[in-house]
Image (cartoon, rainbow, N blue to C red; front, side, top):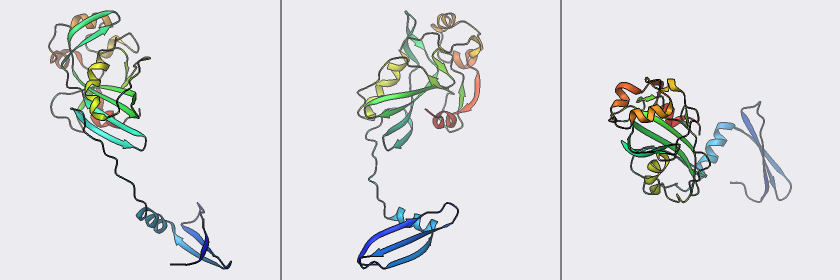
Length: 222
């Protein structure tokens, strides 16, 4: 190892595969070497140690989790087959639901970037089929949550109450198109038609495959 080094300089040239290194000693003499770029990168990586990022206790139905330096990207299997929903000012208690996946970004204690998808029944796999969402406020996978603020989620475990809270937000008519289901109904007629049906009715008479899978849902941008 070189001693009495006053300064070390790296010269990076994007047109070359080697990196020029220059060590300047206290007496002013210089030592120049050329190092392959991949060897230098491996050496630097070997000396960088990052503390592990721990998730803590995860909420029920967590099927995917990605850790970033400033937050988490999490996908939940909502696990609700009925929930009170609202369409404008009309309440539909115990409304039947298909299998809903919810994805969001958790940063500090705030949640943003909601995505909502309708998945096939059975065990979730990367190839599980996704369907067009039959509800308003969803465009593709993007869920419009309006001006609602989601704060106080300082641990991932607290996300266990999030699906019910999100699904019970009042639906408007954002993004809704009658051809999003086999029934070709207006949004209000759709809610009225579905309110006394079993959840399985979605898969036999309502949902249209969208040609995407759970992998697409988990990997899409928020």
